[in-house]
Image (cartoon, rainbow, N blue to C red; front, side, top):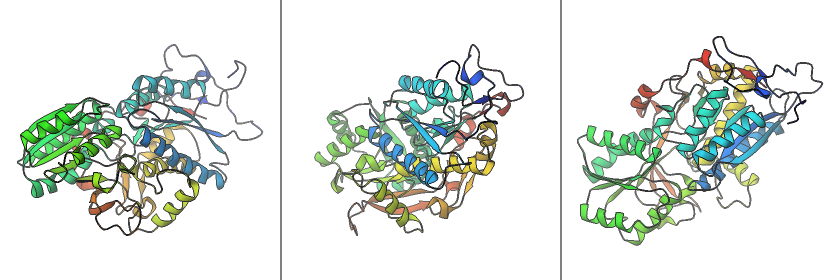
Length: 429
């Protein structure tokens, strides 16, 4: 942006809020567009993990965001403004994510920020967003800490978290497979927090964790882990491993013939991580927030729109990651419409009261935003491999649907301390 160009933003400090120390630039200007001859586009920053461990999911959620935006633009945009985007790849790296968030907010002057599969990336971006008051939608990171110790007033979390999924699947697994458990944990924030939740639920229901095996991110040889599991011979193995690591783990478990000899629990199963692996790799029980074969009104039309928009995409039907990206973006733009403004503090207040009917979410139960943690409370599905598919890509068999109130994460809620609204810088584009 040239020095003489007026800012897209107008900074309006909330009572008691101070400007960011040492920050002079477009956010600190007082330019307004009230006398503009035509409305400026609404600019949204898409910061997605397009490379690295979660590349498949990062690319997938971006398509969901873009489809929601395209549908709004087909109807005239929002508040009479066309919606435009800038996009950056976080590479699944928290250090890169900080640079991306700073660039989008300070230089490109996005109105809002969306993205994040890797929990470290989501945490890093949310800290930058809070500093400037930029509303940030964590679309797909599911670490319990995202709505717990790492919660922020500007951040809204759209996926169920590890504890929600664990609560859904662990009790049933203890009944079916036994009370002796082993954990295989990805050695970073999401893995540790998810495994902690699993441990708490298992032990709270009379089970025992016989051992927890930590695996570094990027592990491609799980043979030592599988050898140790053979020696331990637990009734259940619960994994908190995601992305490309999980694909590799599933393939090697199946090749070792261990997929049927023990009960496998994958806390959650993201669609891009198993699509194309073959049904033999889809063993065990897992959680998800959405499936393209749910017998609900609106689902067939949503699938048809997806196919029309992405005819050449390798994932021929939408999954939970695409769904989360789409729904998060749609609800952001709906909130702008309802409030009639892009003022961040008004949008935050509006989103804290959000309730979405089940029919609009294409889930079985209404979803609502927890105002104390900023995590969307939603239906969780327990699923397994579908041995009797009715059509191609019908991979999941839904075993149970769990109401949001049955899987709430009380421990993360206690750890969450949202910043006061009055201490959050206010702006409108």
